[in-house]
Image (tube, rainbow, N blue to C red; front, top):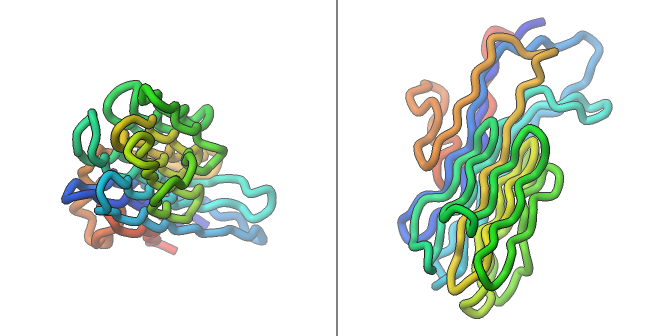
Length: 239
């Protein structure tokens, strides 16, 4: 039976007023099969952190999968935490998308997850960030302080602070996780998690992902889902 579904990945945590990256947002009609069990997983946001250079955590992905074989049907990527203090300056986090957005600045920020695999970690000069691992966002050593990433369909990586040299933001979770930002004298941004639409079971689908701005912000059932410091959401209609 067909059900129209819109979902949002969870957002990354904010930092000194800069918003975490928004979760991605796919929408489409899912054909559920009789006698098949499905798992619905809603992403949790990364933890905000305003403690000096400590970076915030990144958001978990939101998704639906078949229980047998954990086959993904529809996935919304999680957003990465906002950038902290450092050479790259403060700023919003990378958003989730069909391919997650790369963290800023280019090369030092983590790379977004894609349809083919997890994002690589950024090279901040003093330390190369950890790559995403499967669905999970990359995250390095917890260091002196750390802010937890959100759980979900792929967990968001945590944000770190290692005595001023290795602060970085983890990658967002999703179909494939984003890479952690590289380490230097501050927090470089991680990459957003990727989303996914399984065309065998989903028709009429579109996917939107933004940097900071929440996808489908005018949707009447969105609330604050997917925006900085907020959970993901799954909304069903026509069941």
